Structures are given as C-alpha cells and as structure tokens.
Amino acid sequence: MLSLDLGARERHRFIWHYIASRTKLFTEEKVKLLHISPEYCFYEKLKEKKSIKYFPVDKFEPGYDYLSLTKDFDLLNTGLLAEQYDFIICNHVLEHITDDKIAIANLFNILKNDGSAIISVPILENDAPTYEDYTILSPKKRKLHFGQWDHVRYYGTDIENRFIDAGFKVKTVNSSDYFNEMGRIRFGVPKKQYLFHLTKS
Image (cartoon, rainbow, N blue to C red; front, side, top):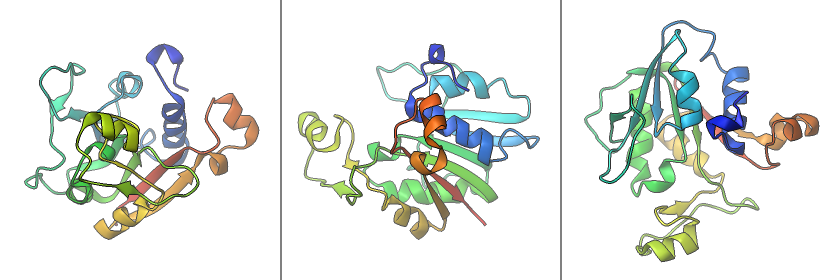
C-alpha cells in the first residue's frame, strides 16, 4: 500500500492496488516499464524494483523541476520506436494534450505485443460524454470548463472508444465495482474512480 508520506492521493492508491493485484508488473522478471509524467509516490517505489527496467519520462518545460531519473519525452513525437515497452503507466496526462489521437496512437505503437498500459484521466460525473472545445484557450476559461487551467478537455468514460480506435483492447475499471465497501473505505478510495487497463495483442 502507498503511504501518505509519499504524497499518495485517492487515485494513486486505487491504481497501485489494481496494478499489484490484477497485473503481472510485479511478478514477472525484466519488465520494461515506461512511466509517463511520474508521480512521486509511484516513482519512489518503482525505481527500487529489481525486476523492473524503469523509464520515468516527461515532456520537459522551462520553469519546472523533474524527478532525477526522468528523461525528456514527447508523446506527440511520431518518430517513437515501435514495440519498446512491456508496460506503460500514464496517469492524468491525456487531458493536457490537444491532439490526443496522436498520443493514444503512440501509446499503442510503443507498447509491445501482449503488453499492458494503465491509463487514468479526470472523468465527468453522471456518465456525461467527453467535453472538448478547442476555441477555449485562456487559462481562466479552461479552468472553468475543464477543471484546470492547462486542461484541454474533460473526458467521459467514452474515452474507451478512443483507445479502441487506436487498436487497444480496453477494460474499464470503476472503483465501486473493484472494491467492496469495506475495502474502498479502508484504502480511502471514492465510489467513482476510473482506470483503464489497455492491452495489445
């Protein structure tokens, strides 16, 4: 379990529990893992895993600090080498990217056959469809419409169609289905938190 002293939020505890319980990331040897925009709470755990060849990456921007092992990486780079990674973690990244179609296609391209990716994004309540409006440009208006100044859309669970269009098989996991009520309270996870487990075959 992730501890609060590593800055783990509700979604982090859910994702970590799912990865540990429902994927082979921690049970297989020599797993090549790409971690996009690494969260500190995951980074501190994953970099110590001897069975994992760990690649934390982010798109470097002026004025920001990055965790020491992190390398510069652009998910919109159409020249990325194919089938490089066994596993990808990419949380709360796609909502920042205007052309998410290219980004999702790249995730599919760089993942090896039989590989897995765990993706999460902020999700609208009440099963509302994805909301995006590319005429909204100011940080103030983006915060009003999309919840944060540098977000370009608010996804619904219909994001799974974008993953399917790219070639992925998709398992949409809701915390309320994944945990029983006692487990959900124990791990401090809200009733409606989503992650998407993508596979490539």
